[in-house]
Length: 111
Image (cartoon, helix red, strand yellow):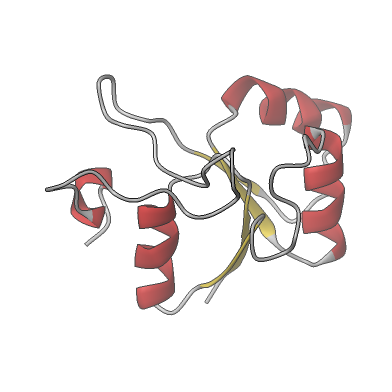
């Protein structure tokens, strides 16, 4: 199975679904990196150092990072469907955001 590093904006529901499917997912919160305004370059460096693929919603920033430094374990860039609520880590307290009522991991294409 794959080893991932989910940045602090990534959907917690998807992290949980990946974990249920046996993937090793470390979140920014788990790594003590949440709520510190850590630059994307540092996120990529940490993921690379840990041998993990980055999970992110920051499409432009991480594609640009890849262009400048393609030596990493990989990047999975996801999009939030238009109108869907964003879920991840609460920026005020670092705790995982609570899912909206009725929201399921399958809403994001993961069973």
